[in-house]
Length: 175
Image 1 (tube, rainbow, N blue to C red):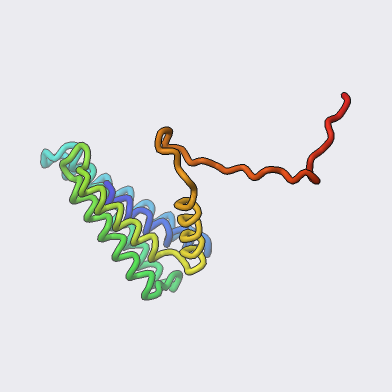
Image 2 (image 1 turned 120 degrees about the vertical axis):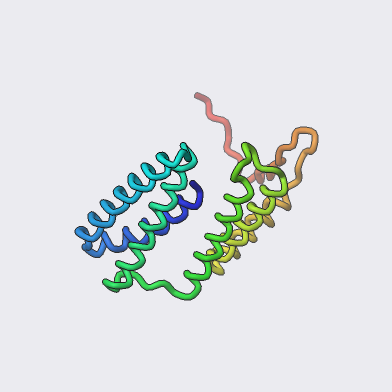
């Protein structure tokens, strides 16, 4: 399912661009193709005895075909052109998703190693997607969080309150 979701998001990004540029007929046709492919693959895999896992595989295959169809249409109609950095990040993101799916395919709850590796890969992917400004802001946020003292008994961050200067104090009202 996770791989299917990745391809669904990929297709939607391109579909939104096409729809925004007025390719409504293409959008409708490709959506109809997706529905047909999903039903066809689901029925085929269910008839082969794959059950719910077969529907998940059909979902993934339908979204792979959806994204591939949108990529072809976008290239044919010159709607969308990806830069080299976008393609590299997309491939790395796909790798992260495939590894996370492989690590948790037959597991009800993933082990610590799978979680650490997936988390690290996701963090590296997000770092690659971010701009210099976003990375600088994130580094500043992490530095500020690490500077705050922590009360280990309560495991809460202590907030130091600066005393108000005497010139800023307000006289009590008589009401």
